Amino acid sequence: MDKKTVAISTDLLNRIEYLVGLLNGYETHLVNGGSLTPEIERNSDWARSQLTDCAIDIFEEISLPPIQPQNIHKVSGKIH
Image (cartoon, rainbow, N blue to C red; front, side, top):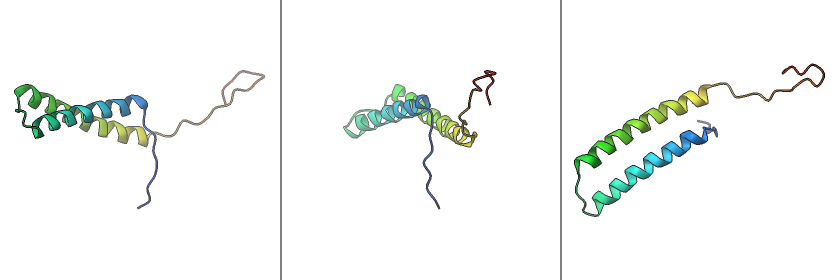
């Protein structure tokens, strides 16, 4: 299978990084002997749900046709 590089929006990438950081923080807390509180459980469920939405957004973004550069006609001002 050929690997391709795809571009996703900065907003989506930032959202993914935030959610992964949140989950990593909870994991570290638990590994270090912290207790699983209802708040951590709720927030972890929410973050996993948001990551699922991010995966869907990635597929939507990469399935869109790429934005083609447009030329502005210098005489008419129309975009071609």
